[in-house]
Amino acid sequence: MGVAGAGKTDIGSMLADHLSVDFIDGDDLHPHANIVKMASGHPLDDEDRQPWLANIGTWLADRADSGAVVACSALKRIYRDQLRMACPNLAFVHLAGNRTIVTQRIKARTGHFMPASLIDSQYATLEPLTADEVGITLNFDASREELVTMAAAWLADIN
Image (cartoon, rainbow, N blue to C red; front, top):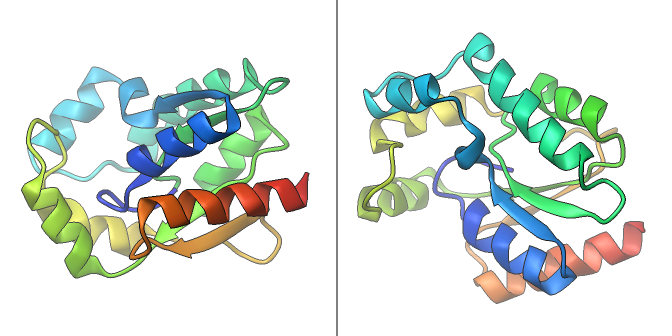
């Protein structure tokens, strides 16, 4: 989980490979209307996110026995709660860090619908993990390999 540009897709894909489980970028499960809205520079609201979170929850629930990794912003507690309702054993790896870094990453991306102008709204929406949530926060300034190693070690410890 984390804001756009935090590295969710890269780290999630690498973690899934490391764990030999399925991976999907949650962006691939957005309804078309959400992509159009974000591409036009408008942030999603809670109502916009409901069908997207339902799609992610279904995808995760279908893989609950074998395990899976999904890259998903999951910015608010209520979004994470909705995902946990679909997949109760869900654990979160929050990739967190400096706004300037994600802004640079977003501006450097090509072919993605998320404009850098929405970074502020993502940080404004973000509710970090709380003590009662199964999750870990990692600073995305670390190398991709270090982040995967830390996430995999943490997951092994909780299982």
